[in-house]
Amino acid sequence: MSDITIRLCTPDDAGRLSVVAAATFVETYAGIVDGEDIVFHCGTTHAAAAYEALLADPSRRLFLATVEPGDAPVGFLLMGPPDLPVETGPGDMELTRIYALHRFHGTGLGQRLMQTAIDTARAAGARRLLLAVYSRNARANAFYAKMGFEQVGTRLFHVGVNDYLDWVLALTL
Image (cartoon, rainbow, N blue to C red; front, side, top):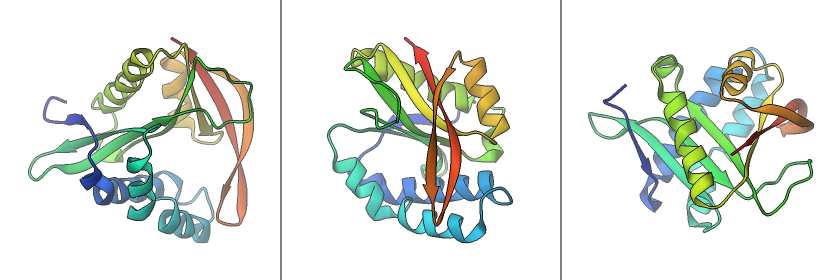
């Protein structure tokens, strides 16, 4: 979709990141994850202040996908050093979040965001890109398999007061 721009985030993007993160989290997990957990998670993990802190962290890379009019946020990705319960090394980078509004699924946005992540990891000298995905998120799991990711472990992801099983995936670059 040519009218979508993907750009490196600036410190002014915390609000845009917060809005699109909360919206995509609700879209994806409503009816799957406990509702109170979703509200808590969006109010904390996806709060503008949380994104201000991530944007201030020099070890993180954030990219925002927007459309006109007005630079409306439709997706984003967050990368940084790996923090996953699998063996990692200096050649590893984690794709912590890759989110796109459902309305933009099937437009090529996901592939463009993933290619941005792969290019960024390679430019940083990474040899492997890692991520964690909810085991019951069939659409995301199919996308990652199509992109060449393979399962290398599992983790429990804490949302609100409950734990959810994630698969840890890796792509050799």
